Image 1: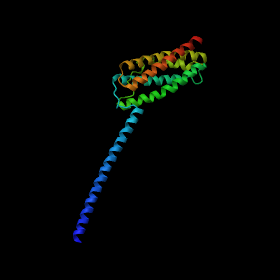
Image 2 (image 1 turned 60 degrees about the horizontal axis):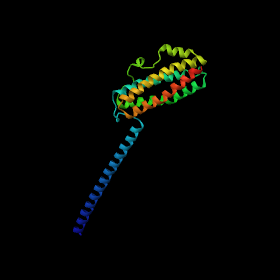
Image 3 (image 1 turned 45 degrees about the vertical axis):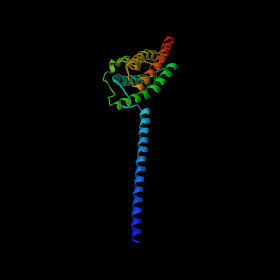
Image 4 (image 1 turned 30 degrees about the horizontal axis):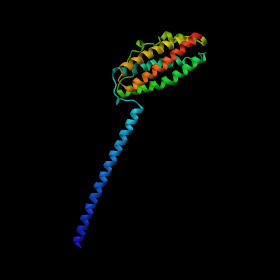
Length: 203
């Protein structure tokens, strides 16, 4: 009986050790699986919101730093249309600017944060197409057709500056998503420039 008990105890002990080892391996496997899931989630998040994981260069950083305040001023100009604009086509362009550029600002800010770079390059007034304080005051003082005409003239110049910066990003940038956004800016704002010129022709 003693021998049986010893053997039983030893067998149970060995069985317990094997079971524990199996559980440990299973846990490790689960950890690896969870780790893989985490990596997958991170990759998905990275793809959804650009971060420092993507390659980028100084041109990408400059593009974002300059385009953010450029877009912000375009939104300020668009906001002035409320209660001042008269032309239906001007109002459509204003709505298109607000719909496109606010999300683009958020996207570029996310890039800069992920890249560990500041949002501003401190060269706002040196950027192509930026309005002066007097330009903004003149626009704010205008109403009706006068506003529509002034808005169209100023926004054409503003868009031309954005297109110039976007083309430079397409040429010199290294980040695929930044270059893709630059392409969208070129396409959308070139089309809006053409529409604004048509508006000017008939005002």
